[in-house]
Structure formats: structure tokens, C-alpha cells
Amino acid sequence: MTDPTQLPVTPKPFLLDGGQAADAVVNQCLDLEAAGEFDQAQTLLRRAAAVRPEVLARYRQTKAVLAGLKTPYTPDLAPFIMAETDSRRPFIPHRIRRQISGIRVAVAAGVLVTCSLMALLQRTFPEQTDWSGRPTPVSNVVEASKQDFADSAQSLASAVSSFRSSLFGPAGAGALTQTGAPSDAPIPHRREPSHIPTALTFGDTRAYEGFRCNAPPPNRDAMLGTGVRDDAAQFACSFDDVPLETVGRQAGTLWLTELSPAALAPRPSLLLQQPASASYWRSGDVGVPFREDGYPSGSNSKGLIEKQEPSKYR
Amino acid sequence: MPKPMDQRREQKLIRQAAAGDRESAGTLISTHQSSVYAYILRLSGRSELAEDVVQEAFVRVLTNLDRFDPRYRFSTWLFTIARRVFLNQIEKRRPIYDSDRVGETTGRTCAASGDWEVEEHKGNSRDAMQSALMSLSPEQREIIVLFHQHDWPIWLIAEHLRMPEGTVKSHLHRGRIRLRETVLRSAALAGTAASRLEEVCPHD
Image (cartoon, rainbow over all chains, first blue to last red; front, side, top):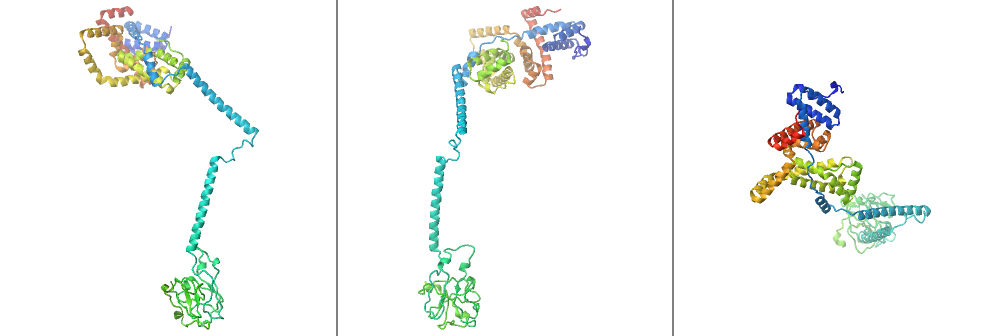
């Protein structure tokens, strides 16, 4: 016999009235039976019934009522459910499902066999099966397009360059000749045109800053304010030092051809140079008149070099 | 009610049904439709509603079998979906319900009304338990049904209804006593039922 002290008596029946205490015991017994503790349930029931006889009656009544919770009559709903399910997500016949499975297996096996064969071929004939370095037709087309584009761009660039050269060639480029100069006077020469850049460039601008002249100045006094050194067989006149543009078309005059933007420069420069063509003068040509004896035609540097109106030379 | 099948066979049936096998789907339906129908019928007390709910629940389950988590019991999943469908149906039918009932009673002919009453009387006598169940609160009714009709453990009911186990037990205990008292009261009113109950469980 089970020890009564070990029985679960959670409802504490002594705290309840008669009916409530009996129902608490009934509930506890039913819970124990549902948990599979049939022995404990019976023991508890006997103990409680010894104290409160109505417990047993309530227990049996409750059991009988709950037993009435039998499964009710169930109509066969399967046909409707199957039809409705088939309309939403069609069933697949067993034969087709087997075929689908077979197709899947065949595809997987084919892929596996192909990969194995490729691996075997690559291992057996590594050179013949090396496709990595060979160009594909698509890469050929891409390369050809790139080459065509490069050729087109190059030809266009050369055309533009030649056009710019024809437009922006340096002023005064050409052969130097002496016109009406004294016979014994040295013929100045200028840099060969080929040495002059064909287009303006940024950066080094020394090529445009002056011309060299091998004509020695007659003397220093006569060239007052020219800034030419006595020993300067050749000298360079910087761009900013060329002061004025002067016309000197008379005989015995050497002419300088160069742009002269610095009209307000403090001192004139002795630039003995003659333009390539003496028939006309271009804007910006600078000339220093000389007498026939080779001396400058004036002692005053300010009067020696005069500004030339550009309109006269066009 | 068919015996519950073992889990391995059930998993196999589910896989086959998910792949489109008609026979497996039919087996699943025949295995579980009685319990789901009884569950919904006990909750609602209306057979036509229970049929609709069971059909819709099964269709939803069978068209979404690929979402089933095999770690859980199929019946639990099915009951959860059926309960959700039932609550949705109740929500939808609530405003229409009374007017339908009124229309039905007022629009019937005498002969048809007689047939309807006969059918209802048959239904009531066939399952007098249902009226007693309907006197319970919805929580008590559902817990009583799941515990005593479907033998669900307390923890599973608590999980299914998303309430603490202590609350489930409290509803269960009160529901038992109230159900018994209601049935006894009804039996006292109906002599035949009372005598039948007396035969089943005589007083000491």
C-alpha cells in the first residue's frame, strides 16, 4: 500500500467546503490518470472517499460526462478536399513522377560523366586541351575594334596637328636676306626655322624670347641705352626688352622680325635682323635703322626706334 | 477514429504528398480528418461550419506541405491551421449569422420547417454533449476538448493556445466541473437522459 504521506494533496481539501474539496480531489485524480499515474489516482481517491464519501460519486459522474466527448460522426470530406487541392496544386501521377525522377538522375549522371571526361582529357592531353590562352571569336572582334579606333584617333590627331601647324607657325620664319644693307655689314642670321617649334607650347618659352644676332654693334655710345654689351658678338634680346616697333625701310637698315608686345619697355634693344621678305612688314616687326656706314641713324635711343603702325604693313 | 500512424510513416507520406502523390494526400486526409472535424465541431457546435473549416484547412495544408517543419507533429500543425481558419470564419460570419438565422426561420414553409426541426432534434439527441460544451467559456471548451478528446498534454495545449500551463490547468479544472454540472442539470430536465446517466454512473 502506498504511503499516504507521499500522496500529492495539492488542493488542500481542508481549506475548502465540502463540494469544492471533493471537486478538487476529482480534478487531481483525473490529472493523475491522464499522466498515466493510475495507482496514485486510485489511492488518492480511496483516501478522499474515506473522509468525504461524495468524492467517489462526483468522480464517476465527471468521468461519465467526459467519456461522452466521443468523436462525433464525421462526413467524408476527402473528395472535396482532393478536388480543391488538385485545382490549386495539381497532383502528379506516379508514372510521371517516376519519369521526372529518372530524367533528373539522367541529367545529373550526364553532367558527371561530361565533367569526368573533360578532366580525363585535360590530364591526358594537356597541350591540346589548353583553351585558356586562345582568343575566342568575341575577343578577336574586341581587339579589332580597339585597333580600328586607335588608327582613327591617330589619323585624326595628325590631321589636327598639321592644321594647327599651318595656322600657328612662328612669325618671320624663313630665310634671312639682306636688303639694302651695307656691303660690308655682317649679315645677321637667325635660327633656322626648323629649330623653331611649329606651335606654341606651354613651359619653356625661350625660343620666342629673342633672336640672336651676330652683327656687332658699332659702338657703345652710338647705341645708347640699348643695353648691348660691347663684346657681344651675339646677343639675345629678351622678349620683354624689345621696346618698340619701328619702321626702317630705308637703305642700310637692318630689320628685326619679332613680336614686340613690350612697347613701354624702358630701353630699346639693338636687334639687327631683317625679315625674310623685305617687301612688306608685319605687325610686330621691330627695326633699328642704321646709316650706311653701319652706325645707327640716331644717337637717341628713343628716337632711334620708333613705333610702327601695324596698318601700314598689311 | 483511425489510429495515429507512427511518425516515420507519416513523414514519408508527407514527402510523397508534397511531391504530388495523390494517394499519400488521401491517406493523410483519411487519417486526420475525423480528429480535426471533431475538434472544430466541438468548438463551434455547427457541423456545416466545421466541414467548411476542415476542408479549407486541409487544402491549405496540402498546398503548403513544403513548408511543414518535420520536427513537429503533423497533427499539431494541422490543428493550428484549422483553428486559425475557424477563428477567421467566425470573424467573417459573425455579423451575418443572426440575420441568416432570422431569414431561415421566417422564410420557411411549414413542411420545410418541420423537416428542419426534425433534423435539429436528431442532431441534438445524437450529441447532447455539445450543448453542455457550448455553455463553457471558449477557453474552457477548447481545453476540455483538446485534453479529453484528443489527449493532448498540458504543455502542448499551452503552446497551442499560447497561454501559461497554470492557466490551462485552471481552465481545465473549472471546465470539468462546470461541464458535469451542466450535463447533470440537463439530465434532470430530460428524464431519459438522466436515467441513462444514472445507468452509466449510479450514485453510491
